[in-house]
Length: 136
Image 1 (cartoon, rainbow, N blue to C red):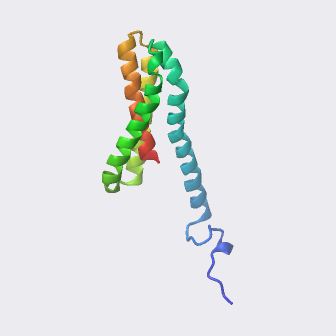
Image 2 (image 1 turned 135 degrees about the vertical axis):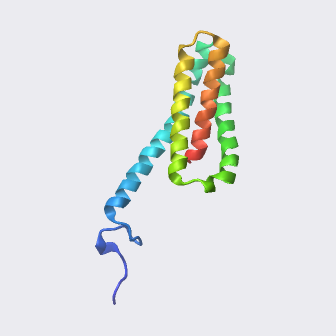
């Protein structure tokens, strides 16, 4: 009985993809997943510190709320328009949103005006939510 399985060819089962390509894609996906989920973890980890820094301790939960609202809004938008763009374009947009959000959070942390700094950190949080939705 002849088998048409690709097990002996060094590629993943049921695929004509070379093993090296498979591993590159696998490692890239894992790294991008870590980068994507790092933003969510970062915002939740620094929410208390940022709220305390700006004297808005009662608004600490606002960071998580804004993050999830950004995620939800971008999920709705992304499901309608994402198919028009390639994966590389979506990855670029995700990494851009993450980079800008990290920059805004860092800038907000060094500002002394509590109202402007708090608003800027919330904008950075929304961008993190956008990146989470696109990255998923």
